[in-house]
Length: 310
Image (cartoon, rainbow, N blue to C red; front, top):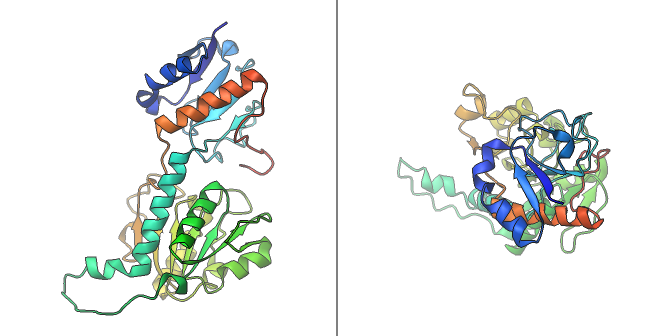
């Protein structure tokens, strides 16, 4: 009997229209992929993105799993109609993109590249940057993405430390946890990268108190979630010079409103949520593997813990 897979993210359907049915067939999975569900009770799997029109999962009584296309699930995890297992997207292409973005912007600030690229006054400034081993980089969030980025920066000889909400052991990266560990991890940091999920515990984790712990003139990179940073506190720290520059890829409201002060601030770089994008070629492999697992009665990959929020 053929499975019914409801692809409920119409804005990216063109990327999957041919690829998903083709790869399902190659995997030996007999499935009809539909973009409308006239009878929700016959749907076996839902492929989902948080901004999709689908918000009420109640009619999908036969659905075995909701398979996310994005790593973030904060906009769906609290949906009370969602009783089906929820899986988030973890894919090598997401990791690779994030590592490239974090490494590139870390090196940009470490080397002071802006000083040379934006030099219309033709100032001859032979100031040499410190070596990477003299820079403390704090990675807030040591999940799959944070750990990969931390290891990439450590491979470049940065002095990398990590922080996680729960205790973790990462080879070669000293990793702290808890409130006391957070202060230790942030103290004197030259660069801070935020790669935490958005939860009540992580919202505004970079507030005035924590920004003050960084080395004066430190750099902040946020490719994680917009609400991880207290915007007002960050702007104040930028104006005072406590923060030398902030490179931000995610925001509380997206697209970032045209009148938001981040756009005009000389010490802020805005990138349009491009640090890590879901590539269809990689995502399809994860989606199909989870469908195969569910049909075989095996544990699902990347199952969301509703209590933790990710």
